[in-house]
Each structure stands twice: as C-alpha cells, then as structure tokens.
Amino acid sequence: MRWSRRRLLGTAGPGLAGLAVGCPRPSPEVERAFVGQDPERGHLLRDGAVASAPVADRIRCDVLVIGGGASGLAAAWRLARAGERSVHLLELEPGLGGTARSGHTPRSRYPMGAHYLPSPHPELGSLQTLLLDLGIAVGRDARGELELDPRAVCRAPLERHRYRGRWDEGLYPGAGQSGEDEAQWERWQAHLRALDARRGEDGRRLFDLPTDRSSRELRHLDQISMATYLDRLGFDGWRLRWAVDYALRDDYGCTLEQCSAFAGLHHYLSRGLEDTQERFILTWPEGNAHLVGRMADAAGMGDRMHHDTVAHAIDPDSGRVHAYDFAARRQRVFEAQQILWTAPRFVLPRVLPPGRDPLRPGSLGYVPWLVANVELTRRPRGVGAPLSWDNVPVDTDDLGYVVATHLEPLSERVREGTVVTFYQPLPAADDAGLRRRRAELLAGSLDHWCDHVTTRLEAMHPGIGPDIRRIHVARWGHAMIQPRPGHLFGEGRAIARQAIGRVLPCAADVGGLPLFEEAFAGGVRGAEHALARLGRPPEERLL
Image (tube, rainbow, N blue to C red):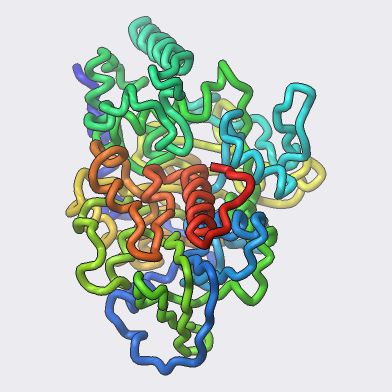
C-alpha cells in the first residue's frame, strides 16, 4: 500500500480547529498571552486608516530600508560596513526581527519564530564574514575553517522522535522497520551523497545558497513536487516519506505534495551533507533574534532606526515615502535616493501607486504558523531517549518543540523548570486553502490556542498539564514563502524581485526560500545594489 499522510496521522484531524472534546486545559492560574506580531497594524495599512494624519517632518537620506527583519538588518549591516551613514530603517512593530523576534518569561528568553542557523557552507563567504564581524565565529583554524564560539553551538542530545509512546534518538523512525524500509533509507542516503558529490556542467554546486547561485542543471525539478520525485525513484515507505515530509514542514512549512522537488533536495544539499562536511547548529535561547540584534548593534543606526513606523505610500520615481509613527501618532515623509523593500513582498502593491507593481496577485503563497512558548515547572520526561534540543512526535501534524534553555551552562541547569517552544505550520495546497488556514489562525481565541497547545503537549507527555505555568502564543499569518512547484525559477518570482523605480524588493520571499541565509543574502544584495546606484560601489563585494 502506498504511504498516505492521512493514514499515518490517523486522528490528527484536518487542522487546528478540530480539538478533541474534553481536552485538558491549563489550570486557571496559568498566565496566557498573545505575543508578537499585531495583525491589526498590518490591517490599518490595508484599510488606509493612517493616511490622514498630519505630516510632522521630512527626512532626506541616501538609502531607506523598509522592514526590520533579517533581510533589513543585513542590508543595514552591509551599508554600515561600506561606510554608508545616510541610512534610515522603518519597522512596523515595536521590536526588530520579523519572524525572528523573541520574547521572555521569568524563566528564560525564547524565540517566537526562527530559532537556529546551521554553520555556513565553506563557499558561503558572505555569511562567514557576518559571523566573524559579530564575534559568533572567533577566528579561523589552520585549515581556514571557522572556529565558532562554543556557547552558540547546540550540544548533544540534539534530536529525538516519539513513536508509539517511546522516544528514540534522531528524526528517522527506524524502530521495528522492515528490511525493505531499511534498504530504502540506505538507498535514499546514497542518492543524496551522489548528488552532493556532483557539480553541474556550468561548474556550480547543484544546490547552493543563495538559491540563485545553484547550477541550472537540475532546475527543472522545480516543476514537480517532492512527492512526485520520490514516487519516480520508488521511495514509497512511510518511514522515509515521513522523515522527508517532516524536514520540509520544519524548513518550509509545507508537505511533500506542496513543495517543489528542487526545494526539497535543496534542504538536504545546500549546506552540505553531515557525513561529508562537519556541520554545527548555532542557536540561542532567544533563537535568531540574537543574530538580528547583533546585526542591529553592528549597523550602529541609533535614532535613524524607526520602530512602530509603517510606510503606507511610496512614490517609486521620486523616492518619497509617507510613513506613520504609531507611538507618536504622527506622519513623516522620507525622501530617499534608494529604497530597499525588505518587508514581505505581498504588501508592496498596497503602498505603490495603482498599476505600478507588475506582479500578478497570487504569484506568491505564504504559509501561516502557530508558535507557542510554554514555561514549565519541570523539564519534560519520557520513556526512551533523554530530553533533547528538538523533540518531535511522529503521529501528529505539529513539529513538537525545542527547548529554549538547552544551552544553559550545566551550573544553571539546576534552576527549576524550563521553557519549550512549540511549532505548528498550517500548510495548504493552494492560495484559497492558505487563506482559510490564516483566517482560522487569527480567529481563534487565546483560550482556544492554549487548549490546543496543552492538548498537543499532553499527547507527548501525559500528565504535563499541571506543570504549565505560562503559555505565550504567537500567530504568524504570513510566516513563510511557500516553495511550491514552479515558484523558485518561475516567472512570478523573477518579476517579484525586479526593481520598481528606486524600490528594490530583497526579502527572503523574493530570494525564493524562507531561510535566514536567503534573507541575509537578499539584504546584502540590496545594499550593494543601492551603493552601485548611488555611484559608490563597495571595494569588496560580498555577493
């Protein structure tokens, strides 16, 4: 019988709305809160409610960066590194980071979204430069390879999975597998090693970061789904397909059927295979907010960084940008020579003059995510493998949780309790499905989502409910660009990343994949584009 995701998930249900009747609830003294992105601020932009505020001042600058996520801060870092100081940055929310924002409970800081970075491939020199600048890499060894700050390197045990009530190491459910299952897994690993060892006829790596550096040789695989690719190779065992499906949901928020085969293989091969290259996971209690904060510090922008400020009208020809400051309740006008749009690309048509954006509506799809941070009075237990950094159930449609306190020094681990970060993407096959999942996410009450998260944790750790002290829920309506078949090398993305007058889109969504490396590369590319347009190309090009 062909592996079926619905058959594997059994009673997991069609989505987040179908919670079991009588599910355990947190006790009344549990602190509950929505945190992170405020959907209403973005809706004010859509509704045009800020345009009538009086103009308070006008600011001229060479470069205006719109968006304070990983791409925007990478651009600010690159411009500062080139000596450019006439730069301002606008961020809609009170805090920086985009989907890499963080929060905290009394027990620990935690990530609201992106939470780790694999050590960069040796050929990704720009990211190596960043890590050296930020002190996350402390130097190079005799072979020229990065020496990483050990405080940022995730220590063992890294990963475990739960299947049929037992926790086992790793993310492949091998317990009880048949000889055929084992043979398929070994053949899959051999297939990946063969691809990793190859270069295209153009001399490029088959799968590289940023994605556009990849060889052209296998780009046709972007036209089919990862499910179809596995079918063609005869990989029909549910264990292998679950492991690959999990990897794609974890990196991209979409399933085998929804992800392009090129993007699926890119997940495994762009950073180098673990058995051919020494790889480390870099992480912090607050996740990638640590990287974003360090980039902001390195950019040294001071009062040129404007929080709580939304750009609501852009003239791409003159470079005039009308922005609203939520905190001061005033409107400001920026006049910029170059504008780097590092906010999500789907918002851009709403701030440009009608008809100026050539991108067809619906060309880009975004997967919504639910992320919840749960403070516990005791560290989770379980039969089998010990608590790991990443803890994944096999029999549900969520991704389990990571432990925010995993990197605490051993001397601090005697402190009571921990904070775990629960992740669940809400994938769908098409734009209509994504809109439904997004509406479902935003319509649910705080109690609804706290009940949901508690139920999922109880399924992994029966009886954990009384240990819960706080649940902080983040809802990301447009968390990740979906690399569906045809997205990476299709017409839509090619149009999406084109300059419109003085405006250059350069966030991760136009880069192609929802990865820190892609967002970082987009920001660096945008900064170097702006410097060239200003007639001040950098002596050292990082991309």
